[in-house]
Each structure stands twice: as structure tokens, then as C-alpha cells.
View: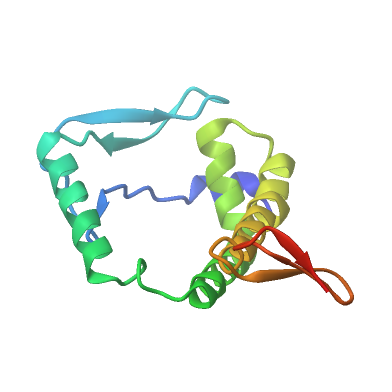
Length: 154
């Protein structure tokens, strides 16, 4: 893959993601997103205003109250985080390119982060979903650690 050619065709379209959809910012102000390696402007990023923040907080509260995440079983949360890790690996070249352009990170380091570091963190966190609220975790064959009682049970 020619990273330079891929970088030349990136089309930036940045908008706030609020309430499950992209939408225009209420503010018309923008800030330049600058590639630190070339000091060229990658794109203009909308500057959120207080109304955008209020909208985001309201949408977050509604989502929490609806239970779409807060009422999921720990196992389902774990499945979703594991799927997100898979998707990051699948899109690793695209994500690495964006990371490199925005942060000035060498492409090899950005690829490592997208292929390994980020997915491994998500997989690790996914593993906590069913272990923090009283579930038992295997220690060795025949022994379990109960997070609700802090006891090792055989």
C-alpha cells in the first residue's frame, strides 16, 4: 500500500456525533486540524458551542435512561466490546492512516496501535464486564475467586 497515495485521497468530513447520528454543529466557528508532520491543514473541525454540549449531555442521559447499554447483561456488553476490537483490527490500515496524519505518528507505530494495542485493551476491558459484579473467575483448575465474597473457593 502506498501510504502517500492513500493520504492524498482522505476526505475529511467532521461533524459532532450526538444522539446516534452525525449532525451539523450549531456553531459556525471552526478550528484547523493540522498535520504536525507537514504543518498543512487537514480540515476544519467544528467548534461545539454550549448548545451542542447541552444536546450531547441530554442525548447521553436519554440513552442511559433508555437502558440500551445500562441494562445490558455483562455478557452482552462483553460481546459488544469484543466485536469492536475485531472491527478495529479489520479497519487497522484506515485508522492508522488517520492517526498518522492527525498526530504525526510514524505509520508503523500507528499500525501497531490499531492492530494490537487498541484491540488488546478492548479485549482486556471486555473481560471485566462479567467479573466486577460478583461473578466467579477461575484461578487454576479446581479453584475459583469470587468477586462478591473475596474468597477463593475449591
